[in-house]
Length: 260
Ligand SMILES: Nc1nc2c(c(=O)[nH]1)N[C@H]1C(S)=C(S)[C@@H](COP(=O)(O)O)O[C@H]1N2
Ligand SMILES: [Mo]
Picture (tube, rainbow, N blue to C red):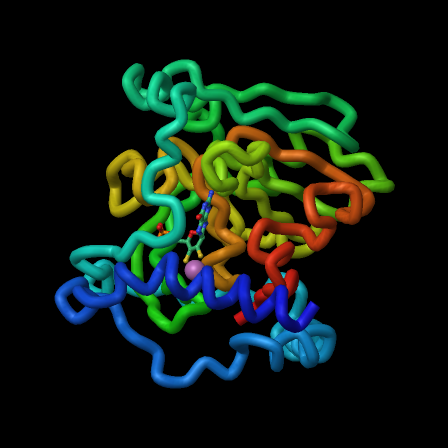
């Protein structure tokens, strides 16, 4: 297991390392110390979560910034373009037929178009994105609070987690598809700064930043913020999904709880 994890981490580093060089030009910051990174995090995970919730409160807000703080070029990371036949077709039509389904433990399963999402109440927030690899960028995000969408679906009492299904296939060519996914518990999912974002810095999301819809969960590390969302599923338990640890990177050994 330890070997699997360090291998996965090396692959992760290799995958994203290449994009690091131009950082100083981007208006983003490199974090010198990342006490939450790695195996340490797994060990203190429960303590951290308890401490954050005890001292910061269940729905305490992440800091918000001013327009002047926005990074002129927000770094992109992970998948920069899903580039599947299906995704390319959606992109070519301006995502006119994109749908975000809400399924699982809900009273009313939903299938929402972008126009429908845009017509719902929105929240705009200027926040700092922290990637586990040690960089951060400030950006402005607009979207519908996830709590609103969940309320529309009517969450059943037995639901405990919200799973986000993404359109980017992480599997190597020829292998069975393995789409990026993530999950939050209901406390984090209903936090006021947890939004399904469709705009960044006043413009529709670009492909590299997760077009047409991505998650922003501002008290969490970057890998929790699923891009290219096409499905939201309410579940009682994460063990039956993919590797069973609640997210693509979690299945490779990262911590499920990624509170900052
Ligand atoms: N679908 C999907 N979502 C994803 C990723 C990804 O590879 N695929 N990468 C994650 C990571 S590690 C980070 S830091 C952020 C990067 O978001 P950005 O490209 O907008 O900076 O997206 C997260 N969400
Ligand atoms: Mo990240």
